[in-house]
Image 1 (tube, rainbow, N blue to C red):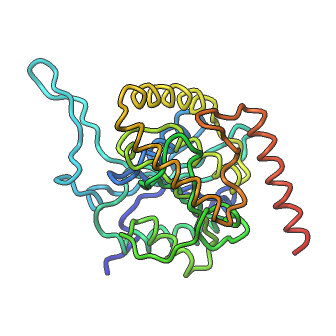
Image 2 (image 1 turned 90 degrees about the vertical axis):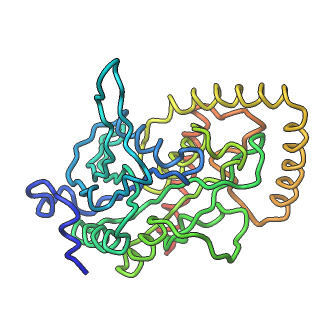
Length: 309
């Protein structure tokens, strides 16, 4: 295997900087199967709303398949300009309380997955990453009129307990995040992941509500204060638009009614204790104070559990 270190270029002194050691790492990669645009949108929001600095960049000419995911370019009158090329970078971030963390975001690699997993596992080990948090969205036969469910996974059972509605055993198509979770686990680096269950009929749309839910769970797991106000506003607007389209199409309404019946039955029969950050009614989204109170309660519960252990 070629040297994994040649896949990336790090800023000078990154691995010697003590301020970069022991931080949580959020992995938020965009790709065509990212239902609701969940992970890709989360990375965009965090970079736009929080202070950040790029500390390491991967060589996308080695990792990206340009024939499968072609760059977008602008044609202006008689010439092409402004090509948007794929990027994958590791950033040093500061949350709203100036708490530092790491963020890996950009285009998911198409090629050299095993070599990439080795490279990132080496990076996480050298930086002594305290916890790696994965976010993703995948399509499920669930209605948009009910709270989105979350499938939690990873090695930190204290961060996944009570979140998932059910615990199936299944073989699925792997992603780079799945391989990273396995690779980091082999290095004894703690991991937790939150896969948002996106309504199948909306999986190709950009859904701020799935990104908001992912952000809420990242906030809890890493004890970060992340910017959710704009996502919450967008969620209300998008939910209204979806409801209007459903009301205008009785056939879709009947399908959603069947999904609601199935959802309610399965949730009632499950052992789920924490449906989401809030028990939402229909399309009502909790306000900032409600979310804040529930986060504080959750963090207090984790602190109590840590003291008992």
